[in-house]
Length: 257
Length: 214
Image: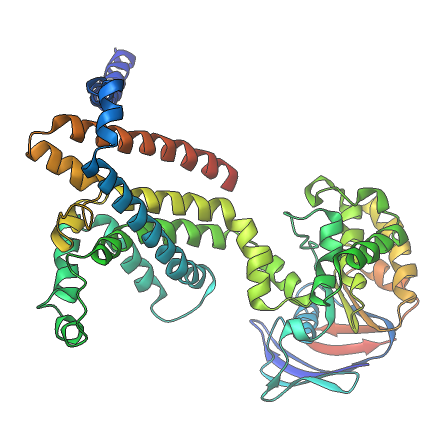
């Protein structure tokens, strides 16, 4: 009896997840897909997504790696607090994040007057897309990287020092190679989260084709404007990437363990 | 010569010593938790003392505000669990310190191989540390420490991770290798047999203080 209930619940949920995705693929006929995916709005969205997620990933690695190392090894006041703050974007609703970013970088935001004086605009530009992605994606990388660094035996770093290698060379030759599966896994997750970013982007960057319209935003607009083929084709691209990410994350997780 | 006169408050006592280690082997003996390893770490620059100085061949490594970073001390350290780099093969481990010396790839390889041969593990050059026995790991760790010609060599309980049978053999080999070195060598052990085997001066530490010399 209980076994049957467990089986039924499991099957139900697995079907609930897979059927919509299959339906999505089913809607996309190969011939129409080819035509839709090379249409100007589709290509523009692909390009914006590729450029912005590459930039936000670069920023995530550049800023997140030192932070993750400090959290893993450092003893500094407020470490637990910083740790919690970094996790915050994972649970903050994306639309709220977008609003918060507007309050900082928008025309009437905290840095608005300063940016205005320099004739700089961030909100509703491609840069805003990148910042929104950094905000929501970086925590995934920092979490994974912190765990990866923490798992590296400090004695190995000490051994490197007693063999004449300075801190940076030790980091590059010992710490990073040993934490690499964790770093790569975190980077993949952060990138995937950035690619799927919708709420913060539409609040903070808008939905302007070729400038701030990423793939998820183009899917949304396609549905709104009745272009279901476009929406479905782009959605299929996103789901395919998501599948690849899940597989990659699994492989890297196994290597990290 | 290593001159070390330092003080460091530890959990259960205060490490307070004033010692000189001449060229050749000195055994630093004493029960577990008597401050031996801490003293070794202070000399290597891995642990900061509360006060005091460390001088190596006339060069101050630690003196009040002057602190030479561990990687600039040229003091090799053989860790208790060997701390071999798991992502490098045996040759890569032994050649590691030579990179810091700015040696070319070829001469790094040649020097590392020569050390492996000398310690009788030349056949293991391409092996990963995880596939080695305890005795082999210990020899790799030793080759890695000696290959880059340090100014002093420190060994923290080099036999602790070995079983009884390997231990006696490794002890004899190690003695021969260490006694051929022309730099100060400090070997930490809590084992009286190990201490007695080396025909070397023994400094005995208890509760952070020197309680005997021989």
